[in-house]
Length: 246
Ligand SMILES: NC(=O)c1ccc[n+]([C@@H]2O[C@H](COP(=O)([O-])OP(=O)(O)OC[C@H]3O[C@@H](n4cnc5c(N)ncnc54)[C@H](OP(=O)(O)O)[C@@H]3O)[C@@H](O)[C@H]2O)c1
View 1 (spheres, rainbow, N blue to C red):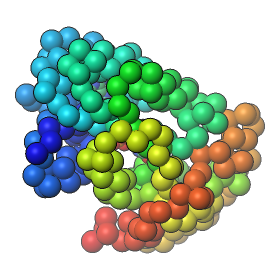
View 2 (cartoon, protein in one colour; view 1 turned 45 degrees about the vertical axis):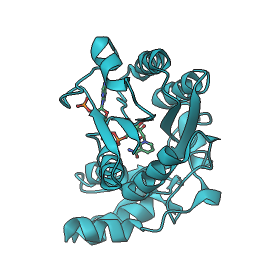
View 3 (spheres, rainbow, N blue to C red; view 1 turned 60 degrees about the horizontal axis):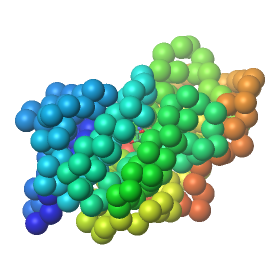
View 4 (spheres, protein in one colour; view 1 turned 180 degrees about the vertical axis):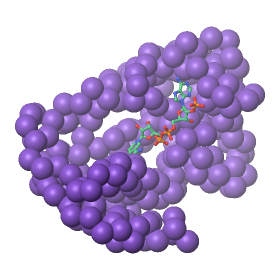
């Protein structure tokens, strides 16, 4: 039996990771700011973090906040892991963190380097956007009478439970370094995904692609966040939407 600490184990990705590892008979500790008995704010760390990592074989690092603090959190986690001699750190990152000039992506890229330079065994998996996130973005856009979406930008949404399957497999396999990027089965424009969302929701609205200015938009339009060679996910956006409704 392996003892595994899942940071962010209460989140969208963390929950199915925990389910898989616990279901396979491993001892799983869930860490988040609110998850007892391992309630830790990674941005501050402290003795509770040392207790959480003590005796652990693998840390699956899923905790993150786009509001900031991830790099500091990673430094605290890595320091605690080093003190405890944890042999394997596994981190979930995002495809294109080194190619898209967004603050959150820069931070995630910096966290990758903190993990890689920790002097411990490590694995980094980059995934594309989860279906849940794409649906949230589209639901927001669909509040207006005309659904405005960035023109010419594609996405490759992936089913979060499939990412959880892969993370659970990697957690048990030992340090592997940077593994191939993982994406969903289809690369589709946001306009197309928007129409799929409206169809599934039974709503009629015009969808309009809006060209945007700036480097970030250009990077997204160039598809730097996509993994067409890593289209290993099987669940399509329509299948996700149908299942969520049912
Ligand atoms: N969503 C996507 O499309 C996507 C795609 C690729 C990769 N990823 C990556 O996958 C990971 C998980 O994403 P997600 O969508 O599952 O996120 P999420 O649902 O927002 O969950 C974040 C988790 O982190 C915990 N957390 C946040 N700040 C913390 C802190 N300072 N200390 C301790 N725990 C903290 C949260 O719990 P508390 O609030 O209780 O602390 C929660 O359990 C992230 O690294 C994200 O960048 C996401």
